[in-house]
Length: 100
Length: 387
Image (cartoon, rainbow over all chains, first blue to last red; front, side, top):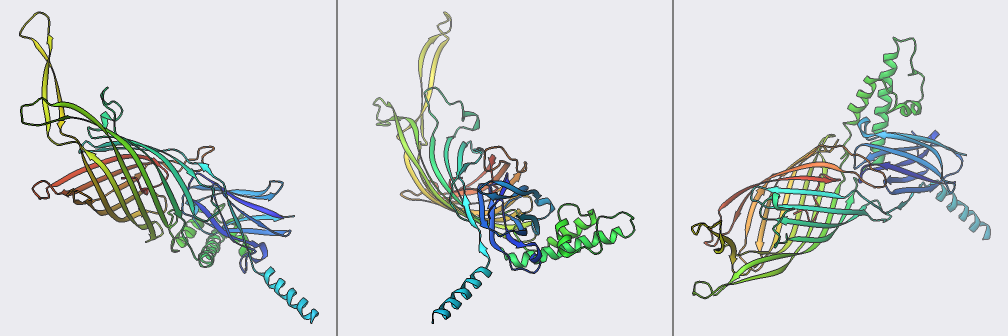
């Protein structure tokens, strides 16, 4: 299935940068998708087989909140979304989602 | 033979499948919030700049922003910026800038490994606190993945504090991009009124005016590097070519009778004028400046630098040099506005400058100028034409 990760934030420069892992391999790797980078107006596209995954990412180059969403294409169905804030730290942010 | 080719192809396919795929980056263009700058100096120089930035849809990890800008200026103080005399137009310039922003490059594997360990430690702090409580959301038998998933959401206060303390030990620029490159050019018109000679010969002088074309073209490079988890070192280097015109420094003063008040013959009224003696002169210069300083990289609330600048006249002896200590104070956090891709920061930039300029007798007298600027823009960094 083709998927899109988007970041919605007030900052021009803030971006999220990470990898998508199978949930069972989050701590052991390797990732399924590398260089999953998104910022306001810039999306990351990739394809995955059905399964449970985690998008493990860091927030970079900006501060504030960022809403991260995983969307299934071409139907544009949001599989999951959550809001992260740099006041809680910049690293080790995880967003779990399932591809059916 | 055919079988071995098929086996080899299957093997190659298996290896290719095992490699992680790389995500494709797709960019959309969009307008950023307009940027506004109001600048006032103690030497009566003032300027107002409005920029309309647009984020270019280029599929790259870099950010590309172009801005159309319009600037008006005055050498008679900030109060004259929007209320010049009826027969006088303020100097203006219009131009275009390009800004390229490079995010920080990090060793993802190392950073996430350390941050993940910190998350697990934070969860364990909460588990320890729970032991004295009957009802607890933190389980002693939670898996490492379950522990990480709690991060940033529902940690106990001590656990959160523990996490932030451990994360702070990981090097990184946090909120600041690694580098910025900006290029720009602008062209403008400036009207001059003056008296033409021959001076001192007793012949009548003539009122004249001219409209001159001014040019600015510049480049800027800024880079940040982590000092601690809350502070970063920043360096900024800029070069700018300026073609400008200066009015002649000597002025002529004259008065013409305009009648009298009432019927009193002793109440003659005169209208007096001052105009420069001679046409304006072309003062083209090139300026090179470099600042180094420290910025709050955790929240981008301030930046302070110290720097040097030098200006050389291209066809004149308009040489000068000096030092400056710009301080940026950011009073507003990021705030989103619908339909725009960026946000405003409300920044006050205070720049004391000491400079030494070559005068007619080849001396370098000292000049001290304080410039205060209100900046509504998305960064605590300058751009190429932010002169």
